[in-house]
Length: 257
Image (tube, rainbow, N blue to C red):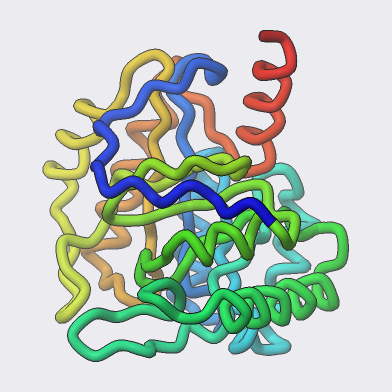
């Protein structure tokens, strides 16, 4: 097997322009979906009320039966506005100073096995409603993670916090607008700061990924989220996307080149 190219450690420039996306494409990535809570429901209500779309990052090794039922109902009601994707395996932390579930030299065979088990779990719950997009918990990964995702048929890889160039067949749709300023302890960003960041990232051809962790958000953070997505929704140049819709548009664009 020909090894994949090494992951570049050069930060990609942000904001990013995408040649096959029109206007400003926005997706909302909702992380750590495994318990069906009031906070998760509230976040989804805010996003969907603004006519936005939600990419649900489901943790397969932790997802509860109640959450499976809730996600199924949501997909049935909103269909194209909901994307069901894989967020790691069990959201385990194998590190100490640095948190990671994947990457950091974990053997390829181990990473591939865990990703494959998680993939099978999601397919058993949601069948063909799962779209093959993978986001690694804690944003940690390495070339072995990418190789495993490619072998298992994933189409999209979504990073967070840092944005590294990846030279694989996986489409890279990564977040660049985090609602949280810090995670330990959790601290949100004021709406004014989020709107300023949005104005910097928004331009024709831009791809803006909003990162949301419902269980780490307080009421102020929920209000900030509502303010942000309402501002996005009021912009006629904005297109709300899921990983599926972006993948399809990019795939079509590449086929015409």
